[in-house]
Length: 469
Image 1 (tube, rainbow, N blue to C red):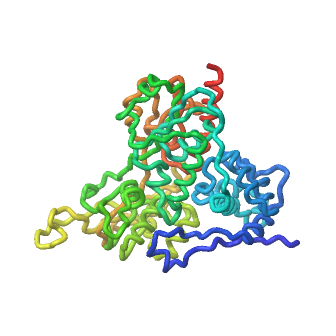
Image 2 (spheres, helix red, strand yellow):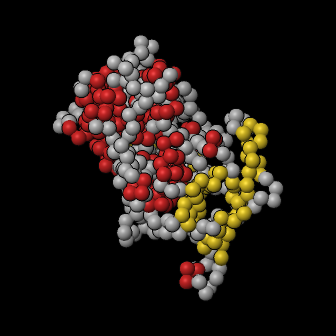
């Protein structure tokens, strides 16, 4: 049988339709398409795709089960390595991880591993009636700080081994960045809730509205009987440029903007949580979060949305798929541009200006690419006398985040680096005995799957540590 050189396309909503709703953009493979895509896998003996997966899913084996129509068996294989398959199948950058190692990719397009993982997880969620069995408890209590990807992965791995795990979440809903940071149209919150429910069936307890470092400290967790603590508190402290005008009304961090929309339901017709609706919007940055913010602004009714990024399209760090979706939906990319000032106005005769200090535009300067920086990317350099003003009334800053210093400041002996990340060894162990950390709290903002890999590695180390007590 001849090999199909191309991946099977992912069915999606039409751009002109999806730009005005929060329903999921990608509609998922049918059983027929999934089997046909799985048949493109040649089941390599050396399994290079597995080495590209941060949680080492047995990819050829689960795809082989799809070929045979044994979808539940495929799910069980994935679940041995991943606690969040329906999430990872949607938001992981497979193109730079497992799929980048796929042997098919040498001559053709790689196998659509991520789309197949999503299919299997969705099939299980829609068809399986079995409840996850709770293992016998081994008597060791472990606290997990944060219910984002690293925390959930760590909790799931430990619960499977019989540990008594409690997850402490600062917000009112479990899921961390999966619920507050990633929009509904990319990751439906019902999917996250389902994954969290599976962990609860394993015995994981989740306590929300608990801010570790304020409600409780790490030391108090130990005093209350926990034998180990994993810190997966993420990197929720937004970065700003430090340019004039960033304190004006109508300037958001992407974190705040997405949290208001996703977790606090500001996209509803008459929301209790205020948010911009309408007008012209500039999103500063070029990562996945910038794409999420821009596409959310569009769905909230913005008449025009710009992505303002200081490098070219070749350096844009967002996933190719997200960039293509944004373009299809009508978002305009202002590349090789950098903001220098956010303009405001104080016109008492303007009814919009009843409280003064609203955004009235954004000054930018054009850039060109110079010599490479320390990461190998060509450094953007301002072009003299190239300033211009972008006509916008909302600005969303999406230039990265840092770990919140609260846990560091309330935990004695916890070493952090210059960027505020918690210092750990290869097993996730911090400078405090019994305290482990992983994910964005260590690395700064990174991918969901890399955070899960860190959580899983820490769970292995915690298990070994407590088995010797």
